[in-house]
Length: 452
Image (cartoon, rainbow, N blue to C red; front, side, top):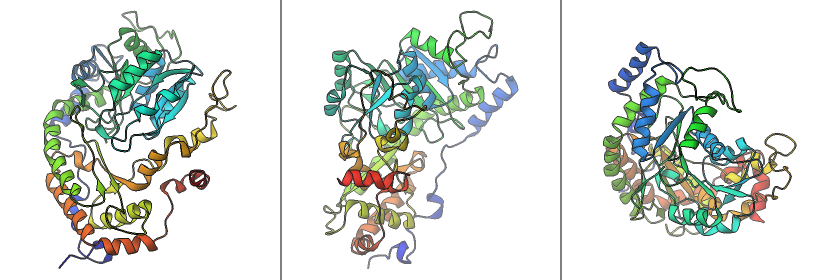
């Protein structure tokens, strides 16, 4: 006799303690690291004999197989400064994927550059390299591939295009700390790369932080200056003289110390994730209608985020759209105790900031003389729309190295829901439904554009 679903009055499959696992894991080593800074009273990179920030930068560069690492106060700032330090100029175009965190596409605006979007691959969810070349114009200056969810993008193909058209490549590696692509470490492949230390990341701090890594001394030096109000850092004593425009974007020594402590045990945690996650994914792969994360043989998946696509036809359900199927499954699985969520409810080109094309007033930077007109039409990004419409993600909880038992119960919850797909289908057909992006201010208009 099959168990009744929790959404219809049954007992949830997942115990309460497994519904929200702790992440990050905070240990006595982390507390001691923070206390060490408090005792030292050296709280910032400008403090004489400050050890934690310099220590983190040295260890992170070694971790990424790069010559330099420069810390800043967020992953977003890291990308802004990396592009600026590489020489991005107003009106330049930067190619980015249509699915990522909004900071990926927002960062070019810092330099008054214009984002140009490319659809994603339906399996890896990374930028579709086969569509990049057609987006390259006389104004294209850089490509920002994102290693989304922890799976490295197709970097060899991207680098080949960069060489052909003399473009910069900046890896957005915020979700792929420690990942490798064809034997190379994520972060060491492009001209520069950026990382986030947000609390959701695999190597977090106790708040926000970021790093830029590069082999180029000039780029590293320029970022060091930009993060301290553009000051001239060539003198031994700080003179508080700004040589260029910058801002106060430094990382705190407290946050650096916390991250160093987390970094020291990262590989122990990652080995446990590499044991826990595939077992969970393999169980779900046995259920018809679930498309699980794919890992090509030539790269590692760091399991930062697990995205599952849902196909009602493959599940044997007639008359249920992918969006309704996904929405009904989320209701059912949340009731069972599985913390599934969206990751982005709208393609990046559909975000109001890009639809309105007026980041700084007067239409800037899109209105700069000589810029190419940009058409951010959702119909140009069908795969991104489909993936947002038919998928859900597991985030953060599974990063806990002791998540194995919880993932086993999550898998049991999936299996219970699949035993009751007939009831889920009836619910899906009857429930009120609108696409995820309907919630944004111009969502209904974008929905109409996609339908057209």
